[in-house]
Length: 471
Image (cartoon, rainbow, N blue to C red; front, side):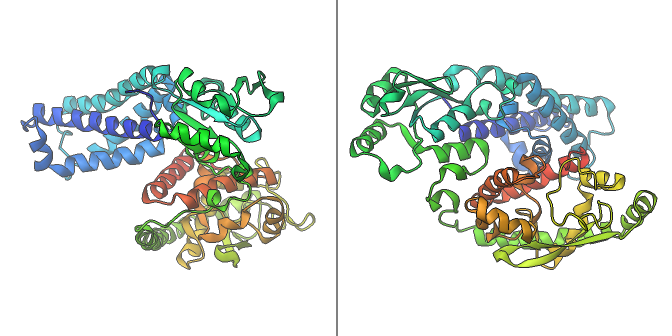
């Protein structure tokens, strides 16, 4: 039985062992300090203690990106992230004593709990980075097709996390290519060899102990009957055979629209799960609750923003702009003004840039903390937006992007959001290329909507706001 782990298996392992370490440490401390029984019966007796710890770890681990595989592959980076998340988890856990064990009266036991929480997960992550980064645990893949799709996949997997490739810690290792083009025989693509043609598949799979065969052909309907038979033979031997777009999506968290061709199944969601309607209702109720709270917070901030604007850039407090929402309908979005008044009076609609000279000093702070987006809770309350979803774009840019970017209109299938998967995964966008990259993240969000993904986006957005990492 091979020990090589897929990406979902790695993420599941991280979550499971994280929670076992944290809850196991809590169980030991309960037995030592409060004389609880060291067994599963204690979990049944006081389940709230363990449920709260699990929920807090989910919040702070998502906040610190503790389950990004590229980060987990680097021991020091992973230990730092999880240690920080462990510290915040322990402190917040101690501050709610009515539903958690009351460690606070004893400074010694309070310190012990904090140390156990931090050190436990940090040591486990170092073990993971050292052990599970070994070749014995990496899945070996053989890429069928050495064209653009295959080369892009090889580039995605190449290198190491410490070399700046954000996906190299995914646990997949490409051994080479199979391609029927005689001009590519014996050559290298992205530093990987072209090992043979599809007729060599059975022998190459055995020789290189391959776990997955990845089909990197943009138009699979053009495959020859013998290649199809070769892939079926691989599947018959128990190997995973999957399209490049599927593996790329799993690794990067984005839909590879450049390699989708005319295949809508790659871009659009499949059959809707039975829980999707429940998620939609829960999401709308959450939007109403949080936007109502947001309006109360909003009442406290305008005087401070108005004062800052009066000092650095006198003018209106709010800024209204037409955006494209669900089903292509337009609406007026409201934000705190972050640019000089009449910023586009001469130029017309232009892309905003990361260091846009039109942004005021107060506006720069508002953008970095994303507080300029806070008034959009009014749009959420009206049902024009949601807390989480693709960012709404201006009609002038939508017309341009629909003409230049494949599948761009597909992002209008859901309500736009104040924050989204693209916002927490990609830098500031100021071009058509940036819009295309963000679209790939937006389409991934639409395909994989779930409660976990929604909460993860909200946690990462909070991290951006408090870490001043906004754009």
